[in-house]
Image (cartoon, protein in one colour):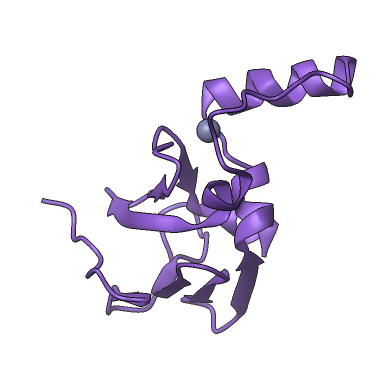
Length: 125
Ligand SMILES: [Zn+2]
């Protein structure tokens, strides 16, 4: 069962044991998510990442968002669907760690198909 964040303004997940993953990659030992602001990650190698939620949403790795980004690159004037409030796109409703490789984020606008693998989070931070 994935561990779920509690429903509070700030959610923290501590994974405990340090060390590195099989590939020699650092992994998160602590994830600290501020629903309206940023995601802070402490890595097993002692470094720390701070990722703004706007940047996190922009980097959503799901197929839908990737296609949308490509469309926008081709046609910067494309109109976005009007039924989504932009401020809801950068507020996190819930998040959970998926397996040993990533973080699934559910945004306030209902979007929840993106799973950020730890390597991506590391890049963003
Ligand atoms: Zn997405």
